[in-house]
Each structure stands twice: as structure tokens, then as C-alpha cells.
Amino acid sequence: MRLDPLLGLSTLAIGAFGCLMVYTATRFQFAAAHISPTYDLKKQAIFMVIGVAVMIAVAAVDYRHYASLAAGFYGLSVLLLIAVYLVGHKSRGAQAWFQVAGYQFEPSEFAKVALILALAAFCAAAKGRLGGRALVAVLVLAAIPFVLIYKQPDLGTALVLAFVLVSVLVLGGASTRHLGALAGIGLVIAVAVVHFGVLKSYQEARLTSFLNATSHPSAAVLATPAGANEYNVAEAKIAVSNGGLTGQGIGKGVQTNLAYVPEQQTDFIFSAVGEQVGFVGSVLVLGLFALLLWRIWRTAYLAKDLFGTLVCVGVFAMIAFQVFENVGMAMGIMPVAGIPLPLMSYGGSSVVMTFAAIGLVMSVRMNGLR
View: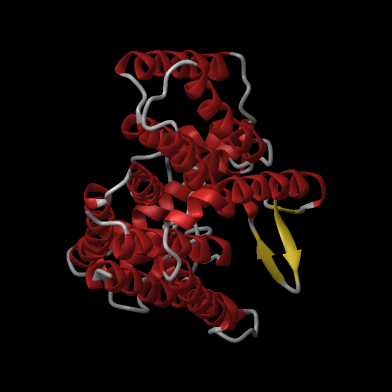
């Protein structure tokens, strides 16, 4: 059994700092509404405790057992996605949650991990030879949850699944010729989506808002999806720039305390990070993510079988894409896609399932190194 202290410590450090950022991003809003300033902090702390327990439980099981369970997890995730599409709770324009006793469960977060296991198990069973029918089967495997999540609609999470798929295919046995063909098909689909107006107006607004962000839109512009998203990005950029080199200080910062940045405890939490701890603190936070990703990649490299390698590659891709997109979104260099910052953004489903995914990596680390 080989433990990886750096993997565990970086995970816990990111989660703990995330709790602090959630608190500073919400306390004044709750106080103004005569609600306990620690309302979201307490819930996020509960999510983190549950997440750590799940991570330990997942890590305690030899990862090879998950190969035989992958089909069951995948099937369950598809059933949950269908159910939430039919009878789920609708919030902020998306029908993506189940409402249970005041808490929301988002099946798409479970689907991320389930798809990683399913793809890894299928590619390992194919012994890394993904040609013809096997490749088509993998694409169908990923397409089902992708379409169901896109229809919620949740374009951001669908893009995460797409990136996970490509990453697993690259190391899972797909040939260069097939990868090139898929890239061409993907480009054609993307052009068709834009040309024929497949995206909803607010989705188009999200994807282009970072190009025209302004903090002083007119009332008419602000009332449009494009104007609202441009305003969100502009306010996030102001918050990050306000931080300067060393930040305004924990719990300080006009943008954060007055909640000028919408969704600053979830999608735009990095704006709160940038304003409070500045460039230096932001680099340290990104350094923790880099450390976490390095340890995951190192485990993938050292894994003694293809299943273990691909599980780690899938988790790496899932976390890396979300970090890159979320941070870029707050800095105004990436489209607004509604993707959480792993372990830091407020939200139980995301936090718990990210811990579960890291638990899979820990299991590979403890049981499957060569």
C-alpha cells in the first residue's frame, strides 16, 4: 500500500480554502437578509466532510473492483439523467437537480465520474485497441450522457464530458487517423451548431460575452442575455484586478462584499479569490491545483494496468478542464460556461463527486502501481 500525502494534503487544502472563500463571498448578503452569515459556510463544510468520507471509502476498495461495477454506475447515471430531465427541479433556466429535504442533488456530477469509469473499463477490456466498432461503441457510450446533459440544458458539464472522452481516447488506444477524423467531425458539428442556431440565445451570450464585457451597460443591454453575461464577466475582471499583487485581505474587497459579481460563491468564486489574496495568493491557489494534478498524472504514469491509467487520466482531464475554464472565465479570457471550480465552488454534488474521483486515484495509488 503506497499512500500519497501530497495528493491528500493538496485536496484538503483546496477544499478548506474553498470553504473560507464561500463564507467571505456570501456573509454580507446573508447578514443583509437577516440570515446567519455562516449559512453557506456550514453547508459547504458538511459537503466537505461527506466528501472526505466518500473519498476514504472509495480509496479503501481496490480500484480493479470498480471495473466490474462501471457498467452499473454508468446505467444508474443515465437513469438519473433521464429522471431529472422528466421530473427534476428547475432552477436558473436548467432542469438539472433533484430537490431533497432542502438540498439539491445534481446527477450530472455523478455522471462525470460514472463516464470516466465506463470509458476506462471499456478501453481496458479492448486492450487499448480502439478501431472500428469498438471506437463507435465508445463514442455512443459518451454521447448518451452528453446529449442528456446538454438538453437540461447544461452546456458546461457537457463540454467537460467531451474533454474527458478525448483525453481517454488519446491514451486508450484510438489511432491518430481516427482522432484526426473525430477532430474534423467535431469541427463540422461546431460550425453547424453556430450557423444553424442550435444554441439557445443565452448559451450564445455566455460563449461570446467575454469578448464584449463592459461594466457599464445600458438598461436595455443589461436586460438581454448577452448584456447580463458581459456585465458578469466585467465585474469579475474588476474584482480580480482590485486584488493587485497581494490582495485586499481576507474578508475585504468592495466587489466581493457588495456582491457586485453574480454567483461569486459558485461560478465566479475565483473573482473573490483574486480580490482578497491578489496575484500572489491566486498563484498559490493555482499552485495547489497544479500539485494535485501532478500527483494524479504521476499515478496515471505509474499505474500497472490500462484501467488504472485511464481512470487517473479521466479524473485529471475532468479537474484540469474545469480549473482552466473557471479561472479563465473569471479573468475574462474564456467563455462563461457555468463550470464550478473543483473543491472550491459552493455546491454539494460537485464537491462530493470530486472527492470521490480523487478517491479513485488514491485507490490506484495504493493498489495498482508497478
